[in-house]
Length: 193
Image 1 (spheres, rainbow, N blue to C red):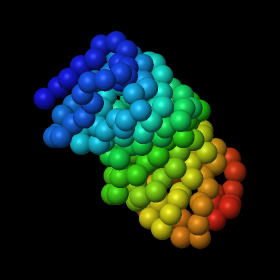
Image 2 (spheres, rainbow, N blue to C red):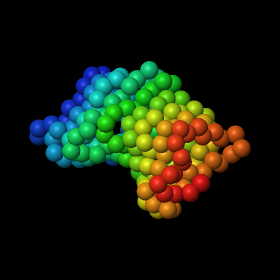
Image 3 (cartoon, rainbow, N blue to C red):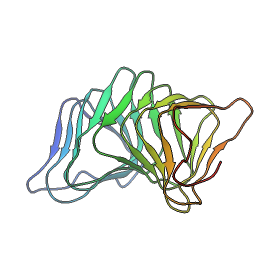
Image 4 (cartoon, helix red, strand yellow):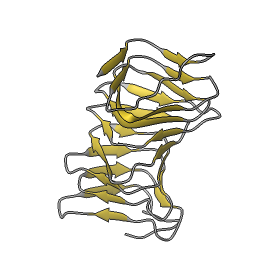
């Protein structure tokens, strides 16, 4: 089913948690804040951000598939929690995922697509594929982490900094038409091409 919050959503106080046990689609039109002290788990759902606003994880916030719509800037705000995307990430049109809170990209065999911008810092801890339809800008530092934090690029990526936190981190240009434009050394701290 579809659940739509056209404005801001704050999880606080007592009451039930917003969770998804099935393949639901949840749409947020405004800010999303978790101040309750318990986790926020939408890992089984598709979350669509249809309006600009902050995402403030004072405790763990986990989303499954995430879409940032065209023209929308979703800003993560540093807090005591973590923001995790365990599914696919689509930065549609000029959609932007920005902010000061690092994004954890944890879903194995998931994809990144779109023509938008990932300007928040991000950590990839499971194998991700950038689709051939992608023309992305990664202006925040991306860190390939752990034994499985690999990226297979089939699209076009313009990036500022992509580092690895271990020797096994791998960035692969998968096709003869895939493009990586990077302004610093790729995997300068650790990892392999």
